[in-house]
Amino acid sequence: MSTKPITRTALPGRTWFVIALLSLSGQIAWGVENAWFNTFVFDTLTPDPRPIAWMVAVSAAVATITTLLMGTLSDRTYTRLGRRRPFILFGYVFWGIVTALFPEVSLLRPIGLAVVMVILADAIMTFFGSTANDANFSAWATDITDTTNRGRVEGLIQMTIFVSFILTTALAGMVIERFGYFVFFYGLGGFVTLTGLIGGLLMKDAPISTEERTRARTPYWQEVFSTFRFQVVRENKILFLLFLSILVNGIAWQVTFPYLLIYIEHFLGFDKGAMGMIMGAALILTALATIPLGILVDHIQRRTFMLWMAFGAAVAALVFAFARGTAFVLLGGTLQTVMMAAFGIVSGAWLKDLYPAESRGQFQGIRMVFMVLLPMIIGPAIGSFLITQFGIPTTLNGEAGFIPTPPLYYVAAVINLLAILPLLRIPVPAKKETIA
Image (tube, rainbow, N blue to C red):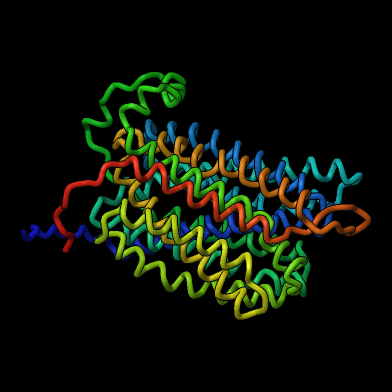
């Protein structure tokens, strides 16, 4: 039986530019935090993996709470600048400033005080980043899209993630080796502020209907705490099953990711320049794959696509665990990042399809619980435990610690397979109309 084609909703070129610019700007800041904040602590303060796990956990908690509070606030904000725009514009500017100032706290002594202040500085940066990006940019991208174009938009967003990885990982290694961490953080922080300012001024909020403006809302704090009612889960069963799959996949990724650069440099034996070249090549290949993947997501049933990507992520983790030598490490790294991108594209588009229209900002906070808070607390803790149990003892700058080893990736592969289970509980949808 033939299906009736649906016309795909077109977005203006200016909107595509703003999406790309703001997404790139935000992902650069997150890329710095997720990779180089950890490496900075390892190289300049202590090789003990526990401070990294603490920093990741605190950052995840701050990100989740901030996204819930500021997302709910933006849902009920109507200003001359717009609904999401003020939060995005000012949030990005301060986000970049704090990122640039981050390395200054490492000058404090004793080391214990420096570690505490690094964690505090990371938390402040996370507050501005989550206000601008997690709560409001994500909600804005949902406001201005629909089910016919979200796969393409998610593909573009995923592409900017990997372009940012190239800038913050591949090029960063060479910049750090030549100029040091301070110049690196100054440059990237300035870039985040500038591009966030440009994108924030150019963006346009989605129109707000008179009905929505006049609709009665519960008091702010009552609306925030309503997030934790079980009734919300019952009313959005498929959405929360999807959240569970994302949670498990995120835990698997966070078991390894905070220690990735340390693993490549100190276990596999690549210097920062060589590591940057390998990571750069893998990320370029992945970035090129994101747009075709986004187009596929708009044409393939979301559940089927996501099941295959969860399985593929497990295979990719195993391949990387056995990778040795430049070519094999490049292959394993590319496979991992492509699987991560594909999983992110399909899950991101599917989430946007399912969010209640009147609470998109608030649901960004719920998303953060499953995508950031729990994975970034549980995953690094598992990784830290595995490193202390199976890692190689080392001493760096007079501090004792451990170098990560392949068991990290064996465990991540098993956890990735568990992400399939919640998806199997989601009913297979009836055949839908095709998108033209």
